[in-house]
Image (cartoon, rainbow, N blue to C red):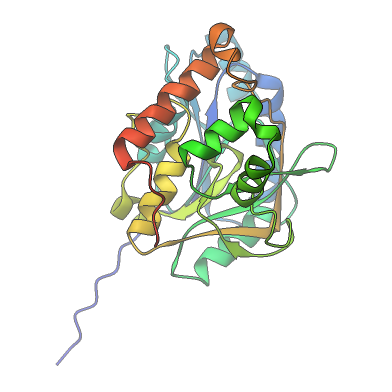
Length: 278
């Protein structure tokens, strides 16, 4: 009897989805590094653009003729913008990142090979460095209300809060050099997944606007039996600006801080305050 195998055919190996909002200087650096890195890889680059400025986009299209620019007049914020790019992607594997990320030589191919050789891994993220070469935290344990309280208030100076914060940041697990399973990874700094796994888990939850969507997504990958792994053998550089930073007082003056709070409430409303045990 002939075996009945089902194969899903993808038009290409890899889709890179970049979310972009206004800062074209960093986007140009991002695209230049990617185009160099993806030589020899059957791939596409999709840039999902919020609040597109037509005159600027014409220049970008001329400089990066092989890139697919997906344009939106309004600011969709990260979650909806990322989802529109993910919906457009045709590759068997998808790399999602913000426009302020610059990949290093060999990093995307290394991350791609890691996923190809580890079928139980659903999400994989690289080691993230600041432009000056310093380590940037990109992997974390799941949030609890106590973690947020310790990180956002004067209580952070207490010994118990320092212990909670160290656990949240995996500081007892050997630093940034070790390949390891983690609760969640920061999406905007760069994260790779199989298209089939994304279809199984679902896109980013659009109840979130900008924050906590990466925590939620990783939780759903774990829920579906797919591991989330920090892979430091691939290195990306992230020009990170913490737009929602500051303590509780920042909520009065910082729109992104308020958005962070609202998305956090939505996360705990959805999942409750207990951390999962996958």
